[in-house]
Length: 202
Ligand code: SF4
Ligand code: SF4
Figure 1: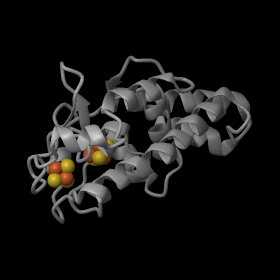
Figure 2: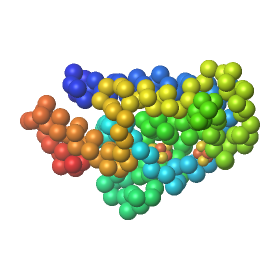
Figure 3: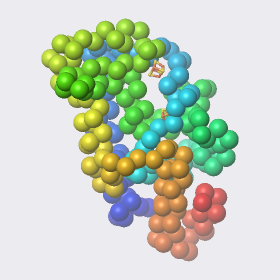
């Protein structure tokens, strides 16, 4: 529906970006034998991600059209714990995340986060709940081609529709839903489906 629009192009850009970088994070974990304990998810329980506009956009699209859209809408619009817990945290779902396929960059990097220290060395800021997460030495990291998270953040901020500015997930996703809804109403002004969606979601 949005394929030939600016929003459609932005959605494709962030989708392609995630598909491009995810193998890096998976490969990092495989290479260095890092794995989260089964059923953990503590990182999401007390955390609300700061996200870019296009990260919000792809989540907004899932909120409007995803398989569990009714649950997602309820989470984003009637979440009394909005200020302290990510609205999509769900301890009962497989990955503890109701939007796992479109989760933001920071969430993809919780367990494989390499940063650059003030001397320019790569350091692993592993999660304290991952066994042996501090065992990666600077020498090992320096010899590897792993990129620090700043590089990924730069790439993210440079893709279509983004900037370096971020916003907390709940507000950013609501804005994105509004933006998609407005675009759809312009594109399909006579569509009953779109009007219904507009009333429900906006
Ligand atoms: S990153 Fe840490 S807190 Fe999050 S699921 Fe993995 S081990 Fe648990
Ligand atoms: S978006 Fe998903 S992975 Fe990220 S903090 Fe929320 S529940 Fe956790």
